[in-house]
Image (cartoon, rainbow, N blue to C red; front, side, top):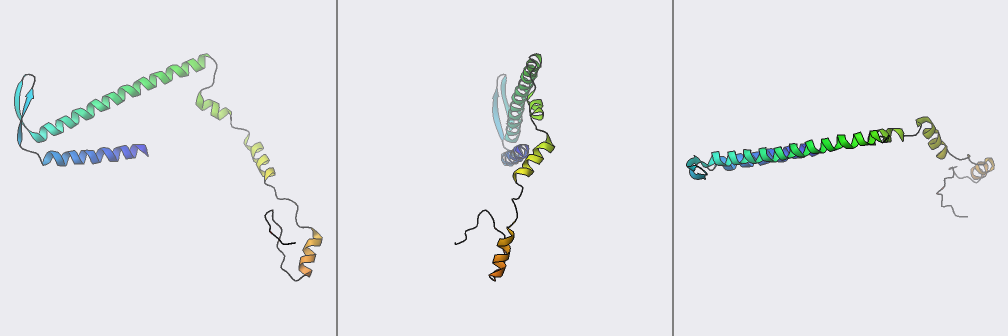
Amino acid sequence: MRVQWTLICALVFALLTAVFAVSNVEAVQVNLLFGDVSLPLILVILTSTLLGGLIVGLFGIIRQYKLQRRMRLLERLLREHGLPLPGEAAVAAVPDTEAAMAQAAAAVAPGPGPVAGEEQSTAAAGEAYTPRTGNSNSEE
């Protein structure tokens, strides 16, 4: 989902930049290190945006490379010390599925049914039988 939002924001920014650039087409004087150049403002805006995006992307790629290198180093150190990797530890910690399901079923198993005399006494009083639950608020 985060990638989708990033893509949407990038497209909106690109659209706004393009609209801004198209509305500014007059020539401007650009002072470079080696001299002055007269360029259309649209070219200056688009070139600046493109170079800025490339610089940000380059820094992102460098950061990702460093993080992956560090992750490989830490994984190698874990293996050297005989410790499980984080994903492997989670798989090993999962209990036996059938035993866990049997234990959960025993915990929620219903209790004993209604007492035989109780059912007959409520029916004899002319009331409809309703089984007791743990949350009954009957008046006695």
